[in-house]
Each structure stands twice: as C-alpha cells, then as structure tokens.
Image 1 (cartoon, rainbow, N blue to C red):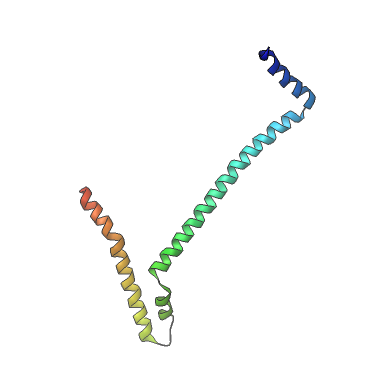
Image 2: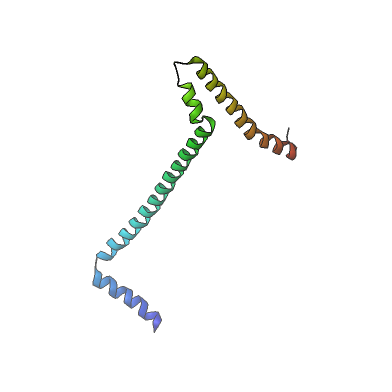
Length: 112
C-alpha cells in the first residue's frame, strides 16, 4: 500500500501546484549555489582579515612605535641615528629568534 501511496502523493502535489513546482526546484538549486558562494566569500574575507592582522602584528614587532618616533624626529640627527640603530638591533634579534628554530630543526633532522 505504501509503495503506491508515495508516488500518488507526489503526483497529486505536482498536479495541484502546477508549474510552480519547477520554479521551486530551480529556486532551491539557486539557493544552494548562493549559499555556497556566500560561504566561500565569507571564508576568503576572514582569511584576508587574518592575514592583515598578522601583518600588522609583524610590523608592530619589527618596528616598535617608540623607535619610529625617534626616526621621525628630523630636527635631531643623533636621535634619528639612535632610532635606526635600535630598529637594526631589533631586526637582528628577531632574525636570530626566528632563524634559530629552523637551524636546530634542520640539524636534528640531518639536513645540510
């Protein structure tokens, strides 16, 4: 009985709804496509914001505000030189901190 009832109900719905059934099917397909597109768009926007936040944190770590303020003091060349030296020293420290794990890992793994 159930075997004949389901196709009968589907046929009854199609006959009562008429051509709107095909429009509903197309709209659900369109909704699925738009949903996937919006998900990918939101994902890419969040990835871009994450990249910008990481870049901002890296810039703040490499160029602290105090050092940049010293470099911008054009009236005092000695302060500008000290600011440049501090930025260079900070860059060397960051390079050593970032490069040391790479060297240690390559030595532990036996890579030349």
